[in-house]
Image (cartoon, rainbow, N blue to C red; front, side):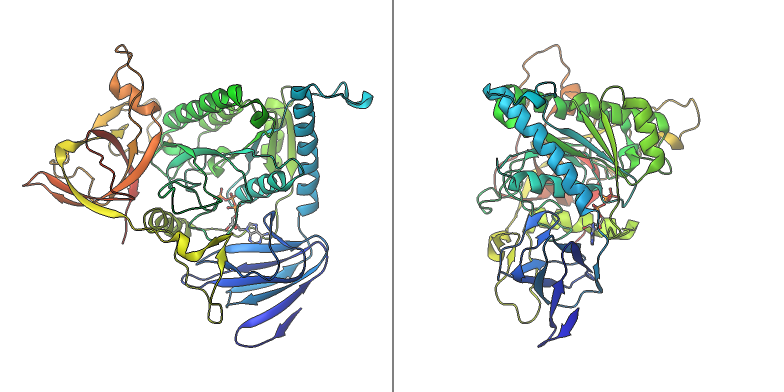
Length: 488
Ligand SMILES: Nc1ncnc2c1ncn2[C@@H]1O[C@H](COP(=O)(O)OP(=O)(O)OP(=O)(O)O)[C@@H](O)[C@H]1O
């Protein structure tokens, strides 16, 4: 029940197993303080008496298992309390995964196993989350990861993001993986998974994550399924290598978030979808598929995989908000700006100090550097044809002029190079000295070391201005352009 307080501050008292849901308009923010009881945001526990800030266009829920009182400052465009949440089902899932982790760790350490558990498998959970658009896949991933991190063993599960329309910890267009050591805060659409040390390792403290990221370059996975598949397999190889040396880390398992196009939707061919799901299942050695609220997909997955792994249909939350195309474009811009400039959320009136998922606000302001370089300082490529239509848009049987996984060099001095205001991923230097592998092939398999923006092209003087998160030299490096455009 809401009660009127001083300027725009209201108290909400929540019954057990209910949640306060809110949506914010562009340019507004909301501070939430827990006054009594216990509460969490997508599985991350709120500390008492500390204002948590939620930024522009955020949509989230404060859930409580046993009841609580919260104080809310700011004016959401929508706010209400819901008594119907799927949290009990998600908590049961978490418990099942927890048992799998404990069995895996016990097996690794050679600890005694109770009689009734002897026959049970000792594999940790490696979970693929599938579902249609706006079904709450990312939210389910966050909740399950946060519960694992908070559990007795303080596991650090790997969270793998294959949804390139969401930046994960890098920028939109990237696929990434990172072990999560502390709960993921849910603060703003600009950093859907919270802070990561992608642009400024020193500026971010306890929550800093160092993701491994690969550049796909587009928001839609159906645009270049071959490249997507190759990147998934690359990520998988890295995860396998990591687990081979980090045996205890392996017992925490992993959770893979996927784009909605893996589930269904216009323009995504059934063959491509199944190939990409299969690529994830193979690459990450998936043993559980979660299908969020989609009967048909659940039946499809049961048919294809039930003999190999466990397929579970889980309920969709009624709180998940439908995000339209324009919202998603705005989020891409927020994410790119956050990567360069950090996250600056003006707190609502009446809140002087607030934290954003555990980080104080000043920690989150970054200062990128703008430098002028020569055209020849950077080798720039595009993967696949210049104007790549989705496969489904090509006439049946039509072959592409340029292979989808061919790295095509771009000459910045050519008019129409498409580089002005383009977002470029600077790749890690190649480690492969094997002469037999062509360099333009190898480019596809190099991880991202950072992102830059071309803010000016001076063709007569063969120079370009680059916005980069730091002043490190990029001379001699290789960069790949995608289809994202920087907007001031
Ligand atoms: N219980 C809830 N209450 C309020 N908002 C919620 C709730 N659950 C999820 N949301 C919000 O709904 C939006 C969509 O959720 P989410 O990103 O998890 O869906 P998705 O299926 O991953 O989306 P996509 O279609 O991009 O793959 C997000 O902004 C999320 O914060």
